[in-house]
Amino acid sequence: MFKQILVAKDRLKGHANRTPIMTSRTLNRMLGAEVFFKCENFQRVGAFKFRGAFNSISRLSDTAKARGVITYSSGNHAQAVALVGQLLQVQTTIVMPNNAPEIKRKATAGYGATIIEYDPQTSSREAIAEDLQAANGHTLIPPYDHEDVIAGQGTAALEMFEELGELDSLLVPCGGGGLLSGSAISARALSSNCQVIGIEPECADDATKSFRSGVLHQVHNPPTIADGVRTPSLGEITFPLVLKYVAAMETVSELAIMEAVRFLFYRMKLVVEPSGALGLAALLSGAVKPADKVGVILSGGNIDAAMMSHILSP
Image (cartoon, rainbow, N blue to C red; front, side, top):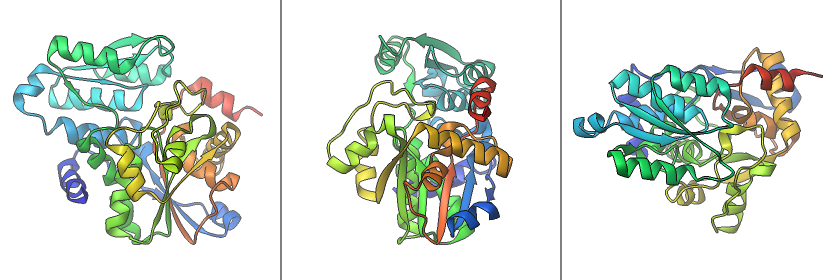
């Protein structure tokens, strides 16, 4: 599948941002390691999700584009699909939970998408999307369980290895596993000794349980501030890829996630949402012992004022 990631890289050229890689001398001294942050908070829509959305939607036939696309997402994938639809003149419909962050909902609507709200306590977003897809002939572009989406997401790590050479380890946030599996595939091809480690919140540890047991686990509506990784489980495509290419899975507490967001804000002047800060949370909390040369993907920066104020308040 690495060939698909290389093709995606060419397809994204001129459309996706080649995001910067940043470091902190303070953090390096604290950890006794070199840590490199891939800043996908500077990607279009403020998250890595643009990569997968553009790669998948741009490959659709003209007939499929004319029928429109549909997806389900709490925010970052929703924004990405909506923006790509605007860029490619494709109608987009997004099934979003009624507790999605307001900043993400407004951005999605601002890109011209039709938003269908649902209550995650009583309804299934997948079922709603499938019913609308069947009724209207839309193409479903899921948030992670899709080869073209995975290939697009894998270009973030690809850029890291192109710029930095080999890494000893790479820490990647994990929700449904699209970014994690795509990153691990790139690592296997370009830095074969690199240990790719997926990071989840402790209360949303479905992928960690699945990885360690070899059996797919689910955690529905986990009460984590990391809204971008509230997916119930890995997917049919991503689960075997994670098992094959990922070295380890670790979890972090809600307090560790908030501390990571604060460090990035105060020490590096970076606005990163809780989901995006999971890798740093693992390093600061000791959940992952740093190797000599560590990559961390900061997956997004879409955090609303109320959440940031809550995290930054003493």
